Length: 360
Image 1: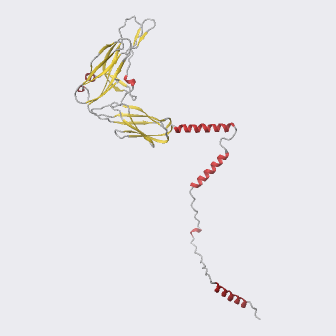
Image 2: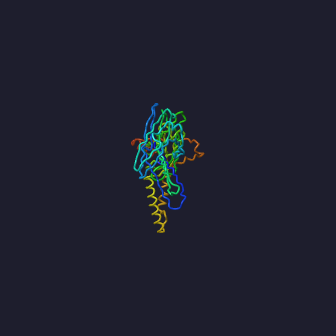
Image 3: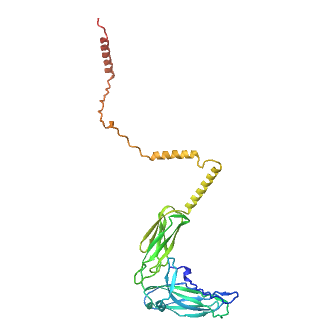
């Protein structure tokens, strides 16, 4: 639940122009604070105490003025806007409002939090420490800067519930490189009387490649929407669904991509380079880019494969096929024993001899 470090440090530059000629000198005061973020859940009505360590790393003495302000989320990136909040200033009281730090000196500034004077739910404030420029004469050509640095207070006053939803999952359809990349958006939809800020627990999954990866989203203030980056490094190939799941509510949002990343991208790159070298060599030798025998072999293979999976044509039904023909009589063959066959031959021979005689 950390915001960007650039949001934790706000610098206000004050540079009055020099009215007289000559080279102008510059002094840049510097401060260091610890911690940069203070987070706590308050239960009950007892006053809580905390502290912030402020140090001067420079070799000059600086004057510091402390103040308390409220903040809100200003855009999708999580940039903060600070404002004066009387209720927050009454509930968070500093032990020192103004002090001086010598060279290489440090001090611990305490503060108290009274939950009875703060609103219920989330309380978002910042303790700022601002350097005060030294007094200068009207004839000085000294340019000064005022640094404003602070600590964020993320407080939860009483019980609260994390309520939100995924509003967008956007990934480019064509994915190349070392992995899958995209953007997601999450909105804090807590409209109750005690809204709180929270960091959603999310899960990303690329089916059917690997296991789901769990991660924690950015801090989302009530009523705000945060945009975050989604990255899945690895080797992916094909038309793949990428899903984002809210572990609290079970909401699932899916986006489809065509990926060729990691080892698959390298393999295809080497294959293209290899084919390019072969084509360049054949073109240089005046040969056709694709050999004729290769084309004929590919054609024969295609015809064979097509015939194998080709469905047979149904038989053509002719008009004569509808006529039912009678079956021809069958002749049964009778096997005669050898002795009877010899006797039959003799009788037939005598009959033929008798009939062949010519009458006188």
